[in-house]
Image (tube, rainbow, N blue to C red; front, side, top):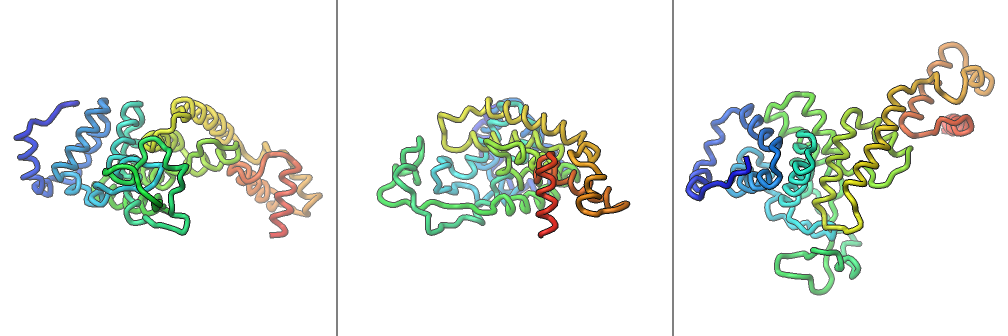
Length: 308
């Protein structure tokens, strides 16, 4: 509701936060979604910080505790992990994005603390130090070589944690499936992609592809600021291209292939039901972006399949 919490009330909440354990999980789910669905971006940001500072957040989502004050040690991130997550949710609220996109953003980076690593390339070069707002500590800019953290497969670990959380809070099964998918795929929507990449993305995401774009741009806008990235233009362009591909895929089947059953029989010797099965395989490959719907491209793909 975009309120500020009075100090004595805030203290009372902190002192009694443990009593949240007596509240039905279904009620916790409803209140959490009510918060995320609110229309006030700054109010939602304050509410999330209040949950953290009152210890309520770690009571209802203990998986969150590891994110508090977690320094990401990466030039792409100037915020601690929980503040990055809160900033991403705030952006989604500001843009009026789907509540399930906001829920996915709340959970999208929970896998980072368990996947932090420093490889041989984990030294920050001088060029990276010029990024606006970047420092590796609150004390000021780094002195000397700086190690850079990586978070390989954090989206997979995060998806597993999200699945546990959503089941525990008794979210509907369809919500669980969609949000876990969005968390697992939150690195997936490409900032600049070919039609082939978009085809595969949309085929994999199904009806959640637009939410995935919302998650991607919100996550991006909570990174270290890049002056040349125009979020709205990217989102408008990505939506338009993805919608075009989605409409094309929705109505595509083997009858629209650029090669006929007769040609397949003549060139590959297939007969009877094998023709239909082969055409379905080709159509699936076209939909998934593995091959373009052009006769020569399909022939090369089929020859490669035979060799394989």
